Image (cartoon, rainbow, N blue to C red; front, side, top):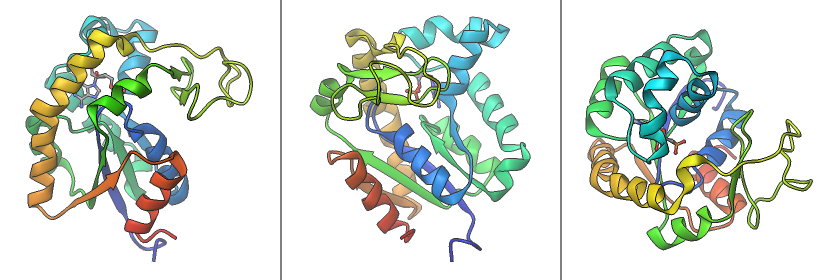
Length: 216
Ligand code: AMP
């Protein structure tokens, strides 16, 4: 069944809900790309490209990057041949304008909402570390790297993301409640939404997702 079916998945959830981690599991299982707009933007900042310079400050403060920039990046990414077999979006769309724009490009087949309380988000962010090279996310307590604070894949020293400060995280949470929950409701009305309890171990969240998508 998985062989013939094309999965065009969106994962929504507050910061640190595990979207990136679960997107990676799905991408591996289904052999499709996982697309993190946040990671594409961080790469642009790292490269100090024109786009990177434009978005740097906004990202650091935890605010959203302009729709014009994000929508263009997404359109270009979806044109890549590897997206023909499906894809997993991690953190896009975040506001209604983006959701409506996505509708003009492609038909999404499943939307996962990883539900996590604000308190849990704040607890988790204290230990979060990211690989500056590949973007893989770790947690010192819940999902530690194998060795010291080095990425398992790249052996590069893990870093604290610039927008994981308390002030930035509060802003990101506020945006989630004010903007992204409307997107969650939009997909619920379309009958595409699958709600996942994000307050379980990483493995149990994975199992719930795979069960609900009939991927076992
Ligand atoms: P993430 O890695 O998904 O937590 O995203 C990190 C940051 O990238 C966000 O706080 C925003 O500044 C920016 N970003 C990521 N996705 C979007 C989006 N869909 N729309 C606007 N800004 C975004």
